[in-house]
Length: 181
Image 1 (cartoon, one colour):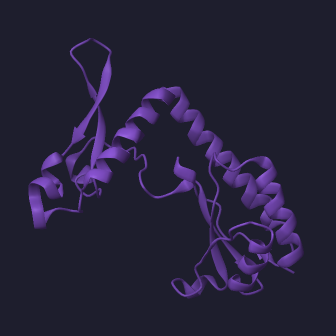
Image 2 (image 1 turned 30 degrees about the vertical axis):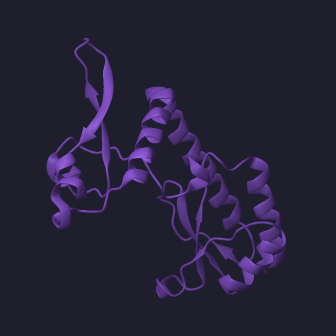
């Protein structure tokens, strides 16, 4: 959603307060209704938000967060359980396909395999130079990890979601084939 922006997301976890209480921001959760087998959405652990806990809250929650929460709940309800499963599978397939084809390129290495949608890509060239060349082709390169994670060398964080088409992925591969060597 929102072209991969970080405004909201979905987390599946065990139904234990000690885990859920650590998540930041406003939480909406699936909850049973009065009708047998029917579920709805409700706020989870509202008391830990900045509205209730003030300076002791895990994170600040404002009106924008509420609006994104409503958007996420509507999106999730429209997808339903099968749609959420298919969405996750699509993201896994696209991201792993992208990592595999990039890993085959000269001057490019994908050092890790256990990921969902985000993965580091290591280059023989400087990330800044690669990103500048990608931008010439209207492609935003990955986030440069070189300063924050020097042990990864000249690496960038790439993210592939359901929003990325096969044409977009293949264009990235073709341009990196030219500029990464």
